[in-house]
Image (cartoon, rainbow, N blue to C red):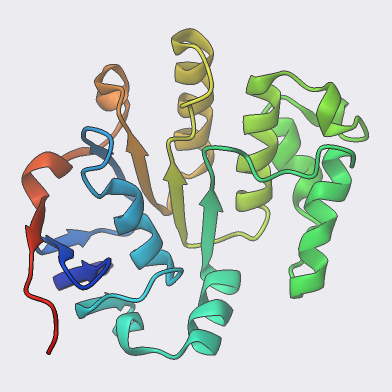
Length: 216
């Protein structure tokens, strides 16, 4: 269970964004839908501990990660969160397996990689360099890298943003299937994918931007 209350992020001395309170149940899938710039990616980065909120709490398993130090946040993210980036964040000149093996530097057990790659239909590409893969295959590698950690929480930022609709929907179906039993929170701008998820959150209604007076 993730419980988020009173969350806000200040970007500069004049601007902040605040969010309505939300809860995310273990084993459920959520899609955050909204226009570009409405605060979707910022919200994911706050949940992941990449960004620090100005105010509010992010309770995960009874721990308020919003108040944790960066070292604790980093350790928590490595152990419990799988993050899937829109731009893949893969090392193009390295093989699929090498892109997964690099997680060993963080102490991650990558022994589940073959089975996950098989589930995603790219086991045969295991030793191929990433720069020889299609966009859909690269996204599957990014998903596999997140899942190999066996995380309890999966955060996906526009995971199909670089793919056409048909391929993107197939990849999203595979992601949801592979994430069964975990908490999946996905950001997208494509409302055609919403029917795949348990819950749809309209971030245009949840996130509120405002101007604030500069501190004296």
